[in-house]
Image 1 (cartoon, rainbow, N blue to C red):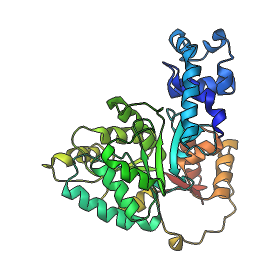
Image 2 (cartoon, rainbow, N blue to C red):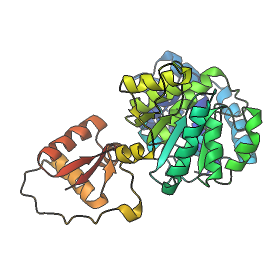
Image 3 (cartoon, helix red, strand yellow):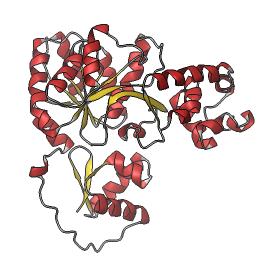
Image 4 (cartoon, rainbow, N blue to C red):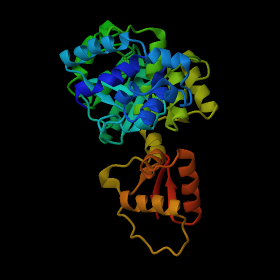
Length: 368
Protein backbone atom coordinates (compact mmCIF):
# COMPACT_ATOMS: atom_id res chain seq x y z
CA UNK A 1 0.00 0.00 0.00
CA UNK A 2 1.47 3.36 -0.98
CA UNK A 3 2.30 5.37 2.13
CA UNK A 4 0.32 8.34 0.83
CA UNK A 5 -2.80 6.15 0.89
CA UNK A 6 -2.52 5.31 4.57
CA UNK A 7 -3.11 8.89 5.74
CA UNK A 8 -6.79 8.46 6.59
CA UNK A 9 -6.11 5.11 8.25
CA UNK A 10 -3.65 6.93 10.48
CA UNK A 11 -6.25 9.57 11.28
CA UNK A 12 -8.80 6.87 12.10
CA UNK A 13 -6.29 4.88 14.14
CA UNK A 14 -5.47 7.94 16.25
CA UNK A 15 -9.07 8.94 16.97
CA UNK A 16 -9.81 8.52 20.66
CA UNK A 17 -12.44 6.01 21.68
CA UNK A 18 -12.77 4.22 18.33
CA UNK A 19 -10.48 1.20 18.34
CA UNK A 20 -10.00 -1.40 15.62
CA UNK A 21 -13.44 -3.01 15.78
CA UNK A 22 -15.39 0.22 15.46
CA UNK A 23 -12.93 1.50 12.85
CA UNK A 24 -13.69 -1.52 10.68
CA UNK A 25 -17.43 -0.92 11.11
CA UNK A 26 -17.00 2.68 9.98
CA UNK A 27 -14.96 1.72 6.92
CA UNK A 28 -17.43 -1.01 5.97
CA UNK A 29 -20.33 1.44 6.24
CA UNK A 30 -18.68 4.34 4.41
CA UNK A 31 -16.64 2.43 1.84
CA UNK A 32 -13.17 3.73 2.73
CA UNK A 33 -11.21 5.33 5.55
CA UNK A 34 -11.30 8.67 3.76
CA UNK A 35 -15.06 8.56 3.32
CA UNK A 36 -15.53 8.10 7.07
CA UNK A 37 -14.52 11.73 7.54
CA UNK A 38 -16.91 12.90 4.83
CA UNK A 39 -19.96 11.15 6.26
CA UNK A 40 -22.47 13.08 8.35
CA UNK A 41 -22.73 12.35 12.06
CA UNK A 42 -26.42 11.49 11.81
CA UNK A 43 -25.57 8.64 9.42
CA UNK A 44 -22.63 7.39 11.47
CA UNK A 45 -24.77 7.25 14.62
CA UNK A 46 -26.86 4.52 12.99
CA UNK A 47 -23.87 2.16 13.22
CA UNK A 48 -23.84 -0.12 16.27
CA UNK A 49 -21.27 1.05 18.81
CA UNK A 50 -20.86 4.53 17.30
CA UNK A 51 -22.15 7.10 19.76
CA UNK A 52 -21.48 10.67 20.85
CA UNK A 53 -18.14 9.87 22.51
CA UNK A 54 -16.78 8.11 19.41
CA UNK A 55 -17.96 10.88 17.09
CA UNK A 56 -16.34 13.50 19.30
CA UNK A 57 -13.02 11.72 18.97
CA UNK A 58 -13.52 11.38 15.23
CA UNK A 59 -14.00 15.12 14.75
CA UNK A 60 -10.89 16.17 16.67
CA UNK A 61 -9.12 18.68 14.40
CA UNK A 62 -5.68 17.73 15.73
CA UNK A 63 -5.96 14.25 14.22
CA UNK A 64 -4.93 15.38 10.75
CA UNK A 65 -1.84 17.28 11.89
CA UNK A 66 -0.72 14.35 14.01
CA UNK A 67 -1.28 11.92 11.14
CA UNK A 68 0.84 14.08 8.83
CA UNK A 69 3.73 13.96 11.31
CA UNK A 70 3.46 10.19 11.67
CA UNK A 71 3.30 9.73 7.91
CA UNK A 72 6.53 11.70 7.59
CA UNK A 73 8.16 9.44 10.19
CA UNK A 74 7.04 6.37 8.25
CA UNK A 75 8.41 7.71 4.95
CA UNK A 76 11.68 8.94 6.47
CA UNK A 77 12.42 5.62 8.18
CA UNK A 78 11.62 3.17 5.38
CA UNK A 79 8.69 1.64 7.26
CA UNK A 80 6.06 -0.39 5.42
CA UNK A 81 2.44 0.17 6.39
CA UNK A 82 -0.54 -2.01 5.43
CA UNK A 83 -4.24 -1.60 6.03
CA UNK A 84 -6.33 -4.63 6.89
CA UNK A 85 -7.86 -4.52 3.40
CA UNK A 86 -4.55 -4.90 1.57
CA UNK A 87 -3.09 -8.12 0.15
CA UNK A 88 0.15 -7.49 2.06
CA UNK A 89 -1.69 -7.59 5.38
CA UNK A 90 -1.04 -10.95 7.16
CA UNK A 91 -3.68 -13.45 6.06
CA UNK A 92 -4.22 -15.05 9.46
CA UNK A 93 -4.60 -11.70 11.18
CA UNK A 94 -7.45 -10.80 8.82
CA UNK A 95 -9.60 -13.36 10.62
CA UNK A 96 -9.22 -11.62 13.99
CA UNK A 97 -12.08 -9.26 14.75
CA UNK A 98 -9.83 -6.93 16.74
CA UNK A 99 -6.85 -7.16 14.40
CA UNK A 100 -5.22 -3.73 13.76
CA UNK A 101 -6.65 -1.65 10.92
CA UNK A 102 -3.08 -0.64 10.17
CA UNK A 103 0.21 -2.51 10.69
CA UNK A 104 3.76 -1.17 10.55
CA UNK A 105 6.80 -3.29 9.79
CA UNK A 106 10.53 -3.16 9.15
CA UNK A 107 12.76 -5.86 7.69
CA UNK A 108 12.48 -8.64 5.14
CA UNK A 109 9.21 -10.22 6.17
CA UNK A 110 7.40 -12.79 4.06
CA UNK A 111 4.26 -14.21 5.64
CA UNK A 112 2.99 -15.92 2.48
CA UNK A 113 3.19 -19.40 3.94
CA UNK A 114 1.09 -21.49 6.29
CA UNK A 115 3.67 -22.72 8.81
CA UNK A 116 3.79 -19.83 11.26
CA UNK A 117 4.04 -20.37 15.02
CA UNK A 118 4.32 -18.10 18.03
CA UNK A 119 6.50 -19.02 20.99
CA UNK A 120 6.06 -17.19 24.29
CA UNK A 121 6.99 -17.68 27.90
CA UNK A 122 8.36 -16.30 31.11
CA UNK A 123 11.05 -13.64 31.36
CA UNK A 124 12.65 -15.82 34.07
CA UNK A 125 13.65 -18.71 31.79
CA UNK A 126 15.00 -21.79 33.58
CA UNK A 127 17.45 -24.41 32.35
CA UNK A 128 14.45 -26.67 31.71
CA UNK A 129 12.86 -24.13 29.36
CA UNK A 130 16.20 -23.43 27.69
CA UNK A 131 16.86 -27.13 27.01
CA UNK A 132 13.37 -27.73 25.64
CA UNK A 133 13.54 -24.71 23.36
CA UNK A 134 16.97 -25.64 21.97
CA UNK A 135 15.78 -29.13 21.07
CA UNK A 136 12.45 -27.92 19.72
CA UNK A 137 13.89 -25.29 17.35
CA UNK A 138 16.57 -27.68 16.16
CA UNK A 139 13.95 -30.30 15.33
CA UNK A 140 11.33 -28.00 13.80
CA UNK A 141 13.71 -26.21 11.42
CA UNK A 142 13.13 -28.96 8.82
CA UNK A 143 9.73 -27.35 8.18
CA UNK A 144 11.27 -23.87 7.76
CA UNK A 145 8.54 -22.23 9.87
CA UNK A 146 8.26 -18.54 10.66
CA UNK A 147 8.85 -17.95 14.37
CA UNK A 148 6.94 -15.14 16.13
CA UNK A 149 7.72 -13.81 19.59
CA UNK A 150 7.90 -10.56 21.56
CA UNK A 151 11.63 -9.65 21.97
CA UNK A 152 11.26 -9.65 25.77
CA UNK A 153 13.76 -11.12 28.21
CA UNK A 154 13.76 -14.86 28.79
CA UNK A 155 11.91 -17.21 26.46
CA UNK A 156 11.15 -14.53 23.84
CA UNK A 157 14.68 -13.37 23.09
CA UNK A 158 16.11 -16.88 23.34
CA UNK A 159 13.52 -17.97 20.76
CA UNK A 160 14.58 -15.21 18.35
CA UNK A 161 18.27 -16.02 18.81
CA UNK A 162 17.73 -19.74 18.18
CA UNK A 163 15.68 -18.96 15.08
CA UNK A 164 18.47 -16.73 13.75
CA UNK A 165 21.04 -19.40 14.55
CA UNK A 166 19.02 -21.95 12.55
CA UNK A 167 18.41 -19.53 9.62
CA UNK A 168 14.67 -19.34 10.28
CA UNK A 169 12.64 -16.22 9.60
CA UNK A 170 11.76 -14.66 12.94
CA UNK A 171 9.52 -11.69 13.71
CA UNK A 172 9.26 -9.63 16.87
CA UNK A 173 5.94 -7.98 17.71
CA UNK A 174 6.68 -4.76 19.57
CA UNK A 175 4.72 -3.02 22.32
CA UNK A 176 5.98 0.45 21.36
CA UNK A 177 6.85 2.61 18.37
CA UNK A 178 9.44 1.71 15.75
CA UNK A 179 11.61 4.62 16.83
CA UNK A 180 13.10 2.54 19.66
CA UNK A 181 13.91 -1.00 20.73
CA UNK A 182 12.87 -2.29 24.16
CA UNK A 183 14.62 -3.68 26.01
CA UNK A 184 17.63 -1.73 24.72
CA UNK A 185 19.91 -4.72 25.39
CA UNK A 186 18.20 -6.55 22.52
CA UNK A 187 18.93 -3.92 19.88
CA UNK A 188 21.64 -6.03 18.19
CA UNK A 189 19.27 -8.99 17.98
CA UNK A 190 16.53 -6.81 16.48
CA UNK A 191 18.92 -5.48 13.83
CA UNK A 192 19.98 -9.02 12.89
CA UNK A 193 16.34 -9.98 12.49
CA UNK A 194 15.85 -7.33 9.79
CA UNK A 195 17.76 -9.54 7.32
CA UNK A 196 15.47 -12.56 7.76
CA UNK A 197 12.26 -11.45 9.42
CA UNK A 198 11.87 -8.17 11.22
CA UNK A 199 9.70 -6.07 13.47
CA UNK A 200 5.92 -5.58 13.44
CA UNK A 201 3.60 -3.40 15.51
CA UNK A 202 0.55 -1.16 15.38
CA UNK A 203 1.92 1.63 17.57
CA UNK A 204 2.97 5.08 16.41
CA UNK A 205 6.41 6.54 17.01
CA UNK A 206 6.98 8.04 20.46
CA UNK A 207 4.76 5.35 22.00
CA UNK A 208 6.37 4.06 25.20
CA UNK A 209 6.48 0.37 26.19
CA UNK A 210 3.79 0.79 28.83
CA UNK A 211 2.22 -2.23 30.53
CA UNK A 212 -1.10 -1.98 28.69
CA UNK A 213 0.71 -1.92 25.34
CA UNK A 214 2.25 -5.34 26.00
CA UNK A 215 -1.23 -6.75 26.57
CA UNK A 216 -2.46 -5.11 23.38
CA UNK A 217 0.42 -6.42 21.27
CA UNK A 218 -0.26 -9.98 22.44
CA UNK A 219 -3.29 -10.15 20.12
CA UNK A 220 -0.93 -9.70 17.16
CA UNK A 221 1.41 -12.44 18.41
CA UNK A 222 -1.55 -14.81 18.69
CA UNK A 223 -3.24 -13.63 15.49
CA UNK A 224 -0.26 -13.92 13.15
CA UNK A 225 0.26 -17.62 13.73
CA UNK A 226 -1.63 -20.86 13.41
CA UNK A 227 -0.50 -21.99 16.86
CA UNK A 228 0.88 -20.47 20.05
CA UNK A 229 3.34 -22.44 22.17
CA UNK A 230 3.86 -21.55 25.82
CA UNK A 231 7.25 -22.86 26.98
CA UNK A 232 7.26 -21.71 30.61
CA UNK A 233 4.88 -19.52 32.59
CA UNK A 234 4.14 -18.74 36.19
CA UNK A 235 0.57 -18.87 37.49
CA UNK A 236 -0.01 -15.37 36.08
CA UNK A 237 1.65 -13.58 33.20
CA UNK A 238 1.48 -12.20 29.68
CA UNK A 239 2.00 -15.63 28.12
CA UNK A 240 -1.29 -16.84 29.58
CA UNK A 241 -3.03 -13.76 28.16
CA UNK A 242 -1.59 -14.58 24.74
CA UNK A 243 -2.83 -18.17 25.10
CA UNK A 244 -6.34 -16.97 25.98
CA UNK A 245 -6.38 -14.66 22.97
CA UNK A 246 -5.21 -17.47 20.68
CA UNK A 247 -8.04 -19.65 21.99
CA UNK A 248 -10.54 -16.86 21.31
CA UNK A 249 -9.28 -16.79 17.71
CA UNK A 250 -9.91 -20.53 17.41
CA UNK A 251 -6.16 -21.17 17.07
CA UNK A 252 -4.31 -24.11 18.55
CA UNK A 253 -2.43 -23.59 21.81
CA UNK A 254 0.33 -25.82 23.18
CA UNK A 255 1.99 -25.82 26.58
CA UNK A 256 5.13 -27.58 27.81
CA UNK A 257 4.33 -29.54 31.01
CA UNK A 258 6.53 -29.31 34.08
CA UNK A 259 6.76 -30.56 37.63
CA UNK A 260 3.90 -29.55 39.91
CA UNK A 261 6.30 -27.78 42.25
CA UNK A 262 8.11 -25.70 39.60
CA UNK A 263 7.03 -22.05 39.78
CA UNK A 264 7.48 -21.44 36.06
CA UNK A 265 5.53 -24.53 35.04
CA UNK A 266 2.40 -23.64 37.03
CA UNK A 267 0.86 -21.65 34.19
CA UNK A 268 1.57 -24.30 31.56
CA UNK A 269 0.25 -27.10 33.76
CA UNK A 270 -2.93 -25.14 34.39
CA UNK A 271 -3.45 -24.53 30.66
CA UNK A 272 -3.21 -28.27 30.04
CA UNK A 273 -5.34 -29.17 33.06
CA UNK A 274 -8.12 -26.79 32.01
CA UNK A 275 -8.02 -28.01 28.37
CA UNK A 276 -6.92 -24.58 27.15
CA UNK A 277 -3.76 -26.05 25.64
CA UNK A 278 -2.56 -29.34 24.25
CA UNK A 279 0.45 -30.85 25.98
CA UNK A 280 3.59 -30.68 23.87
CA UNK A 281 6.73 -32.67 24.63
CA UNK A 282 8.27 -32.70 21.15
CA UNK A 283 7.71 -31.52 17.59
CA UNK A 284 5.77 -34.73 16.93
CA UNK A 285 2.87 -33.40 19.01
CA UNK A 286 2.78 -30.27 16.87
CA UNK A 287 3.01 -32.30 13.66
CA UNK A 288 0.03 -34.43 14.62
CA UNK A 289 -2.35 -31.71 15.79
CA UNK A 290 -1.47 -29.19 13.05
CA UNK A 291 -1.26 -31.91 10.39
CA UNK A 292 2.22 -30.82 9.34
CA UNK A 293 4.13 -33.01 6.96
CA UNK A 294 7.18 -32.62 4.77
CA UNK A 295 6.71 -32.57 0.99
CA UNK A 296 8.41 -35.95 0.58
CA UNK A 297 6.07 -37.45 3.18
CA UNK A 298 2.90 -36.42 1.43
CA UNK A 299 0.82 -39.27 0.13
CA UNK A 300 -0.57 -39.32 -3.43
CA UNK A 301 -3.99 -37.75 -3.64
CA UNK A 302 -6.92 -40.10 -3.98
CA UNK A 303 -8.97 -39.89 -7.15
CA UNK A 304 -12.22 -38.05 -6.55
CA UNK A 305 -15.13 -40.49 -6.54
CA UNK A 306 -18.60 -39.82 -7.90
CA UNK A 307 -20.86 -38.99 -5.00
CA UNK A 308 -24.58 -39.71 -5.20
CA UNK A 309 -25.69 -37.44 -2.40
CA UNK A 310 -27.91 -34.41 -2.19
CA UNK A 311 -26.07 -31.24 -1.23
CA UNK A 312 -27.47 -27.83 -0.37
CA UNK A 313 -26.14 -24.77 -2.20
CA UNK A 314 -24.00 -23.87 0.81
CA UNK A 315 -22.61 -27.40 1.02
CA UNK A 316 -21.79 -27.37 -2.68
CA UNK A 317 -19.83 -24.12 -2.33
CA UNK A 318 -17.64 -25.51 0.45
CA UNK A 319 -17.31 -28.93 -1.16
CA UNK A 320 -16.24 -27.46 -4.51
CA UNK A 321 -13.77 -25.16 -2.75
CA UNK A 322 -12.11 -28.11 -0.99
CA UNK A 323 -12.00 -30.15 -4.21
CA UNK A 324 -10.26 -27.26 -5.95
CA UNK A 325 -7.90 -26.11 -3.17
CA UNK A 326 -7.23 -29.36 -1.30
CA UNK A 327 -6.66 -29.43 2.47
CA UNK A 328 -7.64 -26.16 4.15
CA UNK A 329 -8.09 -24.89 7.70
CA UNK A 330 -11.48 -23.97 9.12
CA UNK A 331 -10.81 -20.23 9.18
CA UNK A 332 -9.49 -20.18 5.60
CA UNK A 333 -12.56 -22.08 4.37
CA UNK A 334 -14.82 -19.61 6.20
CA UNK A 335 -12.97 -16.64 4.71
CA UNK A 336 -13.04 -17.72 1.09
CA UNK A 337 -16.52 -19.21 1.15
CA UNK A 338 -17.76 -16.09 2.94
CA UNK A 339 -19.53 -17.79 5.85
CA UNK A 340 -19.13 -17.18 9.61
CA UNK A 341 -16.81 -19.70 11.27
CA UNK A 342 -19.59 -21.28 13.34
CA UNK A 343 -21.78 -21.74 10.27
CA UNK A 344 -18.84 -23.14 8.30
CA UNK A 345 -18.15 -25.66 11.06
CA UNK A 346 -21.80 -26.80 10.96
CA UNK A 347 -21.76 -27.20 7.18
CA UNK A 348 -18.50 -29.16 7.35
CA UNK A 349 -20.01 -31.45 9.98
CA UNK A 350 -23.00 -32.11 7.72
CA UNK A 351 -20.67 -32.82 4.81
CA UNK A 352 -18.71 -35.23 6.99
CA UNK A 353 -21.91 -37.07 7.91
CA UNK A 354 -22.67 -37.40 4.21
CA UNK A 355 -19.22 -38.81 3.55
CA UNK A 356 -18.18 -35.89 1.36
CA UNK A 357 -15.43 -34.40 3.53
CA UNK A 358 -13.29 -35.56 6.41
CA UNK A 359 -11.60 -33.68 9.26
CA UNK A 360 -7.87 -33.87 9.90
CA UNK A 361 -5.82 -32.87 12.97
CA UNK A 362 -5.35 -29.14 13.41
CA UNK A 363 -8.85 -28.06 12.31
CA UNK A 364 -7.97 -29.04 8.72
CA UNK A 365 -10.55 -30.43 6.28
CA UNK A 366 -10.38 -32.09 2.88
CA UNK A 367 -12.76 -33.50 0.31
CA UNK A 368 -13.03 -37.29 0.22
